[in-house]
Image 1 (cartoon, rainbow, N blue to C red):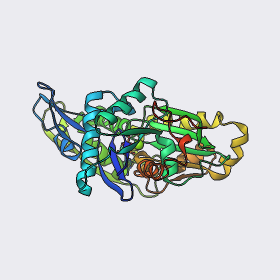
Image 2: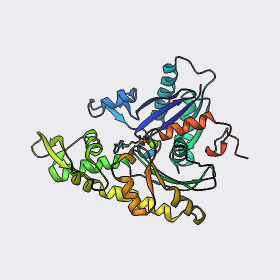
Image 3: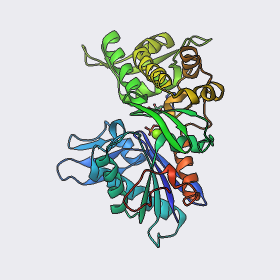
Length: 341
Ligand code: ADP
Ligand code: MG
């Protein structure tokens, strides 16, 4: 039974061949710093964030989209591979083929690290696929055609912009500004404006609730709870959609600029095709209200949020898994894989 994994910086999703998506959990690992022991992974580890004694740290091993901690990544992969087999009540014999989505533009060393982590975690063979490619396949864009496809995958740690044609990536840019950075912006805003310390989850919640890239028809507000930096006491303040928009404006602007820069580099023969098909936004970050409108205004290219953007990458990895032998050109070359003919 083979599996596809979206090893995202914020969320990991697992697809089992013939079954579909069987799990989705945060990419968090709790480690005891004194012993190096891994205490919890996924949802369970996330619950520990910020609530653990000093020597227990909940880490996000894929910070900014690359493998920052090899051992922890291996643990995480093993956990997901095992959980996939448990959930289905079977064991993996022979060892499974595993398709893993990784960011574009990772180095050869990082690529090898993910592959090795996958093998150490129980995979028989590892196939790597670039995330925007997987995302495009996930929403069934015709990436095999000679026409162009323009995809922006906004995750937690990275924004990946990619232009695809004939089953390959023609141009891509990766930016280390995405959903997490917006949370950070909101934390900084609360500190500066209200001398209020707020946690990451509070920031994320308020972003999802009232955050937007452009003014929405209705003005909204939300209360946030934190600790006053001066008095040290708990405090609640009310913030508006305009406050949040202002807080995240610069980061959102950088995402838009990166998209514009990529458009400027699109080979002319693909440009008219992209003008007519438009830009597809994928990944959880694309759910920020009004982001599609802002990008459309700024680029003058029709922009839409793809279907179920949080699961696009894993659905694409799953599709690739179901068609492993047909489309070898979509995978990054690895040691074991025959180069495309
Ligand atoms: P990754 O692929 O890096 O794991 P995901 O595609 O899972 O990332 O997206 C996670 C990011 O999407 C997080 O930063 C999260 O805050 C953001 N996100 C999810 N839902 C929304 C929403 N409704 N509005 C704004 N941001 C959102
Ligand atoms: Mg992702």
